[in-house]
Length: 451
Image (cartoon, rainbow, N blue to C red; front, side, top):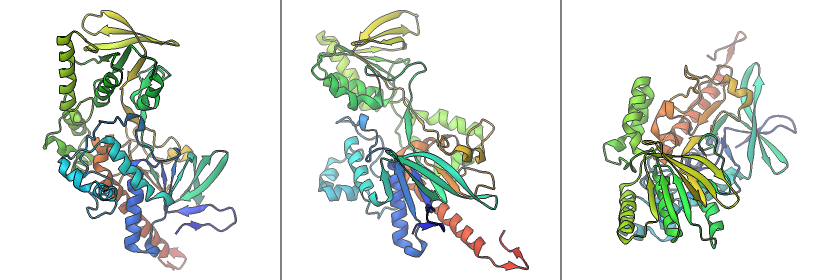
């Protein structure tokens, strides 16, 4: 149960406050619920989460109706941690009356729309632990005898400010869209995350050309979607490669996503970490499912035969001089081989240039000064995903994302989410028990026996 310090204005004290309520922190809330149901009220871990969105949402702009997950449904929010959980994707299917139909489908990879619905279903079961529409605006240290014992988390909802006090933070602020330097998103210049939110406004306008920049899965999905959605428009893919590269989803390579691989990566020397990322980056980064590659190639070839080419590929090229006007975008495609420049007008330019982790320490203010960094200036993170801090900061700060340099490729992916939240919860519980034991040790001749 949450506690309050003495005094009418003292904020509630939680064992854990989560910033953000995407899939990672939804999984955290579920792990907490299962832990608390198992241990009972006296040992329960108290928690609350703040989410700036008005309700749960996960990459809504990319929920193309035929797009599938690139991860097995068994890597849901719970199964790898607790196969018997009532919060699994299979339990979701049972609740929707689709379990048998899904089994008959013989597919490990659900539609992305369906998995999003599963996330919403799971998030709804933890509604009592989250405040939606609350933007966390600051985190302030609370000192006692020169030691930071708590963190005050201030969130804003409209004009109202709310303060909660935490023994631990779990930061799950997700990813932010990455755009090329000097290019700003607008009405006619989109990131892939904008696609479904903005595309409906084009209905009835008969667009003539789209440019899609990028060579990864999202880029290829956007090309296929726009080509299908606007049957008279030309769709031009622009990328610096010769062609789309297939994702390596072979069984041995996929072991890079295993929970044990996190241990290997964390303990490996820096040079080995770099090699592992170089070797296996093609399991996730700038790669495309082979079936989608084949479909796009067949479509381009068919149009070439019929003389109705709407699907065009500008390979070994880059987009330069992008100028947005009221009705069109004037862009230039430059060949990286010859330097030849081809001007193209488009109704919309879509950048499939990926994401980058949100700065997990950006909200911490002066608390961030107590967080330790390595020689490269990167935040130091312990194996339990806790940020390494100066001794005077006793609160735990845990990161769900932004830990690729310490924990490997699964840092921001769903593959290891269920295991990661279990490890974070175990750390919080163990550190809480140790702290309680230290405080309970007797004082002999004025000297505490705590160490």
